[in-house]
Image (cartoon, chains in turn green, yellow):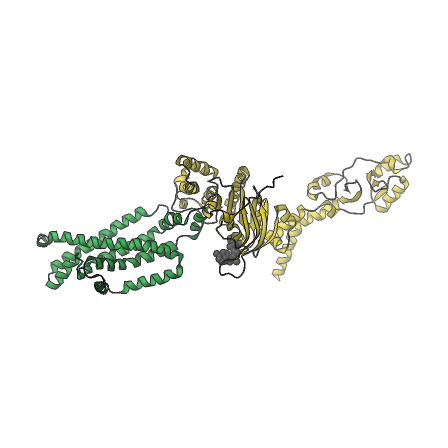
Length: 207
Length: 392
Ligand SMILES: Nc1ncnc2c1ncn2[C@@H]1O[C@H](COP(=O)(O)OP(=O)(O)OP(=O)(O)O)[C@@H](O)[C@H]1O
Ligand SMILES: [Mg+2]
């Protein structure tokens, strides 16, 4: 254990940072795209079904295959990894946000509109706050996926904790495998915990 | 003279929802004056909500025109129009994620009122809702349904809206809570002089609250009138069924006029007749008094057997013993207004005279018996009949 830290301590910090960096950007992009997309899809229910079906399909592609597919288009490194993980993160956020928004009480919306809210006010002050718990559940789910799968990004040269694991596998060194896996698990749990706190903060009282 | 501009006017309005063949509302025209409490009533699907929501452009108008304050609603910006028209719906009209305070000042905030004015407004309105000020910081789920709807009602007044739309606002409340809210809205309406458009399918509610009742059926306008007009002159069986048997028979009793129950052949005698004639007539008709008329049939008074006996044969003519002091009723007067007067008189009847003082009939105590009988037993005997039928 201590030999692992002595040998790989500084490397561990760099790889963990890379893991966080790749995951955070992918997830951030996922949120930025999926949430507004769901809001727009609310207006076009029929198109919504198609889009959600496509997003589900993307999710069924094995992660390694998706990463490999990126190479001819974007080469190797962080960019293709982030694009692949971003595509993965879309689905849970998209579906949850869509369901959350659809489930907002129609009477509440009707009343808000009847009192004179603009469409934008309706989305920002009524729809999204009321759907917040469901949206956040989707984001938490995506976050865990993305952090776990970011490990595979090492396979196309994006770095991250996956480097330890892949090295460990090829060199038969279990301490490297654990040294990569345990921080990933801790990272995932910690993220979920922090997002849970954020969820409580963002969810309006009274619902 | 400048013509008064109605608060709302429908001009030949029809509404066809997209992809629907039939119109939800067909060729409707009527006016709602300022200060009216207008109830839209009809069975489910009759188009009440559709019609009401065209006023604040929550629904578009397919054909015809809807005018608010004399201007076509299409000429207003819909968002702005809605901010100046109160809106209350049956359920969950409050924003669950906002405190009562935030809910109440929602519209003033949208209208960008200054902060200090907002605080005062919230306090003023919670008082109006007859709820304690401490409730301002609660969330809607922490209030009972009735309390929530009180907030819903006052919220619709928060920006001094003069016109308020309410869609079955008390439909989900128990009868006692509903009544207290009806009183609240009625007081506010009278006190503040608001115009209210109120959708309901409860005729009792409509008759209690409305100054104008609009009856709809299948998207068509069936009748417009005051509660009295609707109650006493229902346009057709549909309106009658909305009112209900019990209320109708009650109303019928309320509207029985003197002419409906009077006897039209009273025993009467001419002013110039002799007392001998009078005595014969009394014997023939087995009565102890006679009404006295002149040759134009104008009622002059009455004579009684007591006076006749006492003065006979000193006096010889009816006019000699005539008693001119006697109460009368008019044929168009309501029986209910004269009931006790007729009953309490120790005479057995009261003469009915028209506006020329002509004698047209009498109301006897006996004829009142029938009316009372029908009022008290009318419904019950009907009930008994049906239960007998069911027993078989
Ligand atoms: N959004 C809509 N799209 C299509 N048809 C509609 C829509 N809203 C109402 N309708 C139809 O229009 C007719 C009138 O409906 P409306 O809601 O105005 O009735 P209502 O009198 O308010 O009934 P209720 O007492 O049940 O509320 C009904 O036949 C209804 O099915
Ligand atoms: Mg309705």
